[in-house]
Length: 327
Image (cartoon, rainbow, N blue to C red; front, side):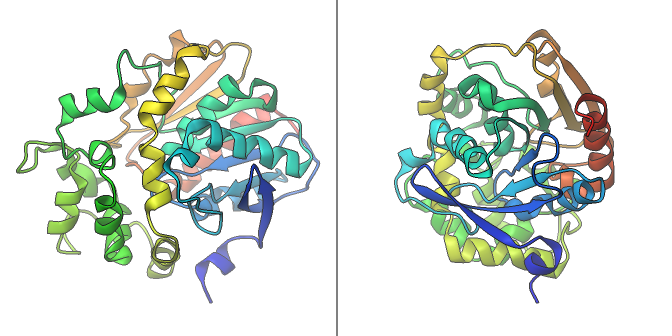
């Protein structure tokens, strides 16, 4: 039996904004303000399995969706279908489906971008925000793809993702190897900060192609857990997930008309000490742009914080919820 079946509640579907969003729900529906867990790349709602279990045990209503392009949700084959208006619109539509006015949004990695943009684009639908690793980021002074190319080189993964077709082919050639490569403990990404043969840093395509499948960090997942991710991306491809990144420039242009700070909104920021992609230093500016902010750092954790250190993450999230949103 799949770990998706044994470790997650039954999947449900919501018709939202022209797509179907798969979601997993625990706790007493209608009791208190729900928390929506938004995953990152290359992940799934399954990434939040430990948090859903903890919320259920605490009597908290919680929902984790497979976001568009991922898992059991719809996968439009148009790049523009993955811009920030669609991604945040899906979450607002999910609230409509649930009959909820507002929710607390918790996001990791790319899901963190979504949840920090929610109160800017849909302010009436957000009761609070929890950022895991991903900070609230001010709008870049120029096109972020141009900035990343100049700073990290042409093979930096986000710059490379702008290339049509090739990223999907490389990542999808062996999804078990791809997911095992990404889903490792902190040492796994240590090599990413070193320049590749092309001079680029975070050149994941080169690192993945040369990886022997063994060295460079301990596995994060059990074989059964790894199979959930590998099977999902084998069935669904990487086009949708990579296309989130292909909208960086479009989203940057869109942000020109959005607010630049958050006030009167409870926010929690959790960083991870050993995250090479989103280090704690990336969040140091946040007290200057968020009026109601609590921050914590989880020692010894790399990028996959909610799976690497679930007990610590759960304690921080549930403690903050109890203080700010008592049931």
